[in-house]
Amino acid sequence: MKRRRMQIDLRSEDELTLERARRALGTEGDSDTGRALLALFARISAAIDQGSVVSFLPGDDPRAVDAVPDITSALRPESRYRFLTHVPHPWRKQLSIKGHRITAGQLVASMEANNWTIDEAASQLALDALAIAEAVDYVARNRSLVEAEAAEEWRRAEPHVTHRAPAHR
Image (cartoon, rainbow, N blue to C red; front, side):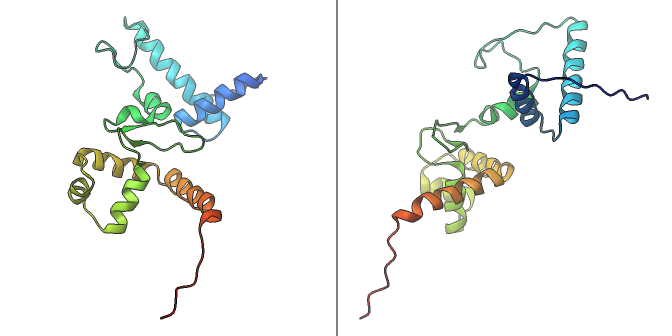
């Protein structure tokens, strides 16, 4: 197969779109991202050729069918989980347990610190075992994000920690 090289002058908004596509598609360079976008366009074009239409419905509409779930889960990771959600926060990006003020990383760290199984954590924290399992799965898939946010929490807390020597008796 003959390879062809293209050069495209990107506007700043195009660069932002390309960066978002790179993150969503899990690609590394501009060339890989361009090829992945062309493959996605080919998939959508083939579906249209076969009689499908592209339409936009709210995700919770029962008629909605996700035509590109890999991109949806990359852009909205919470869409793959029933018990995890994004909570607006100035710097934290990881998902939290719906209806609770605990991130998936904090929950899993508690499990690890206490040596709890999923069922033990569900009992101790009064949560559905499926919510715990989702948190464990999420942390396994996003370990670097969870670790980076834990480090940031420690960095922010450090100035507020009082270091005292233990009292002698």
